[in-house]
Image 1 (tube, one colour):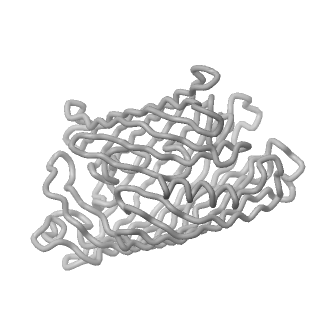
Image 2 (cartoon, rainbow, N blue to C red; image 1 turned 90 degrees about the vertical axis):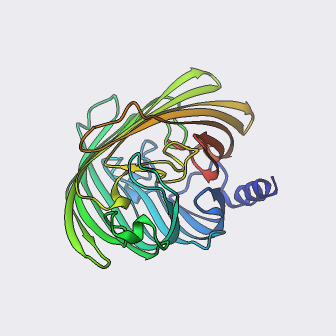
Image 3 (tube, one colour; image 1 turned 135 degrees about the vertical axis):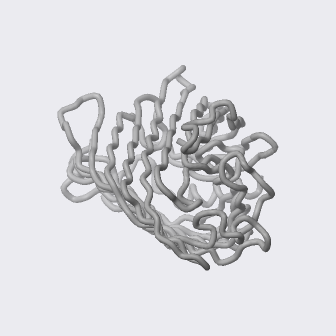
Length: 364
């Protein structure tokens, strides 16, 4: 609890007053969080909230947000990242993405249902993800609909593998590294009443990545191509003045030959909490998860959650007879009442697996 108390105290000092919107606000923040993949992580971030000059007079114009962060973890991982979310011209233009560099280590458990002993591997990867959208059907009162382009680039340099493992054997595509580049189309719909803590509405993200190029490195380099079709939908329902039901539906399908790190996956801080990030990988994945969020006392809240997912491949689209399930609960502390930005503390349980998470923002 010392970690939690320290973070709350420092964050409350750094945040500006809830009721004073500024056109540009810079907020230095300490970074302290915990996930199964990193264990304890610490560092610093500079968060910027921006309202462009032409949008400053319009209260319905959403603020843009950029955050530059540097973190080092108990697992000797280094993270440099700049996620951003930009709104311009009264929300008619919307762009989001991430620029980052990661010196990381992960556990690899295998692909599909053929799960073996976990293997620790090291990887360095710079990453670029860009999504640029233009609002379409601006007169639609039920929500904001956007369409646009997506681009991704990642140089996944595997620096170390365990001797005698699957990654060393060359049997796993991309097991000794890969460089992925490509893009496609996207559709985004948003009718939420609040970005950080919705109580009603829907947000849907449809992605069509076509003919992505994957250049595998290592002893036997080769170049392959793959497509990915993904949809991520969350809906929010007010159950009571102090309770909200959030439901997330996710499906991802891969066609072609993708490296293992670009396959569909389950597990992590957002997809089936309770399992290690990427604990399950295959060509296809689908997930249904739900969460009830309720107020406890003033800024303090709590949640209970559960989810079920399935994997699939070219022979069987989804193996619904081999479900992956997880459940758990957590606490919330509202750091910024105006935007309802929460500190999230969750504990998830899966099959012979569990995970503790201390991060900012909701899982979905």
